[in-house]
Image (cartoon, rainbow, N blue to C red; front, top):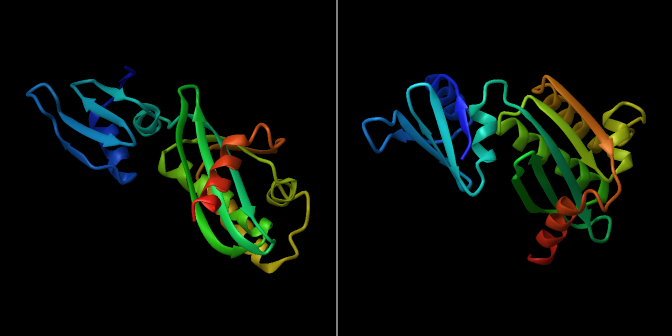
Length: 197
């Protein structure tokens, strides 16, 4: 059960800014409670205690400075263009903090990869991290976003701009290409979204 020594009022402000509902405490000693993704935070005079199956889903928002996370993304398209989906996962020293997937409709594989990056970065911003190490198995997306390769396709260029806008929310970020085996959770989520349509 992680305990964060902090100003509970400041922690509450960060939670509310991220869209987390904060309710009054259950006892006279509790200032407030907040619940998100299997975790509950309880505020006392000078600390916040986080409990539940996924405490990291609230820790990134409560801790001053937001903390650091590894962000994995993958897009998939069957047919290229064809039915497409995205998958992403946010991982910290506490394990998988959050993950998600969704179908996109008909897209190329590169469009789906960009949409996955955008979804993953959006989630990392919402969770309040200030440092992210982003990993994906699309060399094209990684090199285009890092500025090593040109982005000639107007639709991809627009998505690259959106990714850069999201990256500006972090104090520090890195973006690296990794083999599919390292990106297996995001890859599995994207393919599950396609399979469960």
